Length: 465
Image (cartoon, rainbow, N blue to C red):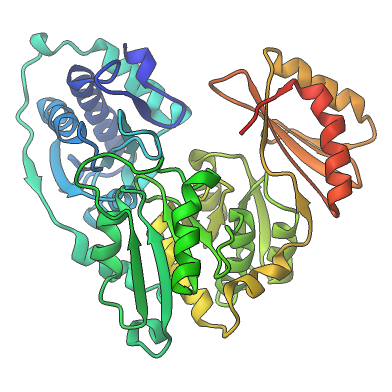
């Protein structure tokens, strides 16, 4: 059963089978062993070096999984600080604010309510993925036998960090909005997830911000719509809300509120790569010469605008483990992915939906133009959007793609990126399914359509959205 719950970047599965309290205890014990050992090896020996921060989302299974997970941690000898019902980025904040050896958020992010899981972080909220500790936790979990162990009696305490978290995030909101000199109206769809708790705690009471709430009730642990803002159908309510209330913009958060999708005043979703390109102008105003990390699937306009704004564009593999590592390596103030994850150095190099929201508020407050007009200059090319293809021979298909365009410039940072001149694309292999994912871009729609038709013949059966 253990093998079924460990994924590339976290623990995630349906509850109660295969993920249940017994497995949660095993993973808790193994996680404590790994996190405390890692902290000790890396010179983290202050009084908090045996403490682990644990938070959870609003799913029905979360309380019992938290209880089992933290009991496993305590039985190993770790001291647990329960930060309660929180968004995932608050756990990252807690690890750094309190100097813990690491932390765990009990959540299944954007998955349906019958799923749950654990997002695990090391000291300084460094990510734990398959190559950065998760495989070791999986190995240790398989060795644990509860009835053969003597509990070591780690302590448990609860701590409310909302005040400190709010104060930290308010540092990044334009003073004109905080004081009420600049008024903004925003429609927020919390997707019945943790934004329903986070937004009132952090953003209510700001003088220049009027928030219109959609799906903020998370008390039932169920979702009115899938808590995934990347799916077009899940944006219907927030798009309608923006138009109805004549709002300046809209936001749709995912289940654990570590990512979001922004909607302009016309009710149109903004591609997350284009949002990054727009935010970069504001960020680099105070950070000339800094690096900016972007997902390699992004529009070519992103690195162009980073350079034009005085920054250094740095391409990254897809996935939070790679993005966070690259952000730290380059000391970049900001980075972003097409998936809606935005990373900030002032949030300890982690992804944060709340921090992204604060960045949008501030950038918008500094101009009198509506959001759609500010985003327009970033739309320099035509994008295909991500297209999936079923293929049992993924490697063979990629080899065929390279062979079909021998004169194209090819790189292999993540899958294959191919620049054919009039158009360019990236094709990545799914880690878990027989799927290839295509993102293609050109200067005009006709070229995109023609290139997609050509490339599609090599990639397999196109999967309908």
